[in-house]
Image 1 (cartoon, rainbow, N blue to C red):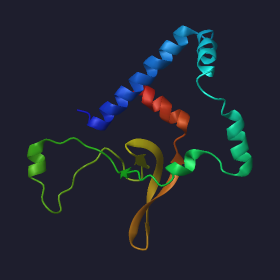
Image 2: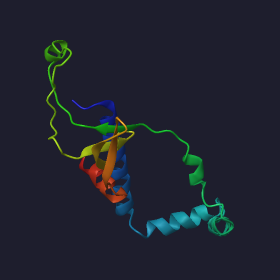
Image 3: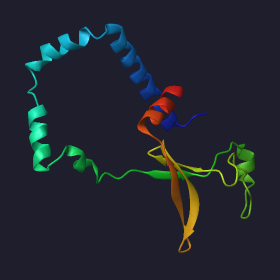
Length: 145
């Protein structure tokens, strides 16, 4: 059984897939006609963006830098019946599907962005990133879902 965030990701991936399929069916000839018809509605911002870049203002990405996100480091997963969960006590061991020494997954808002290894620094646990997932790889993973 999948959790709600996986269902949301599946729905999102399906929406993108269907939109891309529609765009491919329309062909390249349909896109310029739409752009021409919309050009009188929206001003050309390319000159403004170039001027802002020269002045050092950059884009609006700076507005996003302070938005908090949830980061999760996943050691592994398992499925067990509720009756076994009710029997757990202090000192119980739950076997996970990951092997010792395997890279840990780093997720941001439920989306895999990196892998790394567990480290201990000043008696605190941390993770040293060993592999960053590229945006193209993230899209491939979404398409596989």
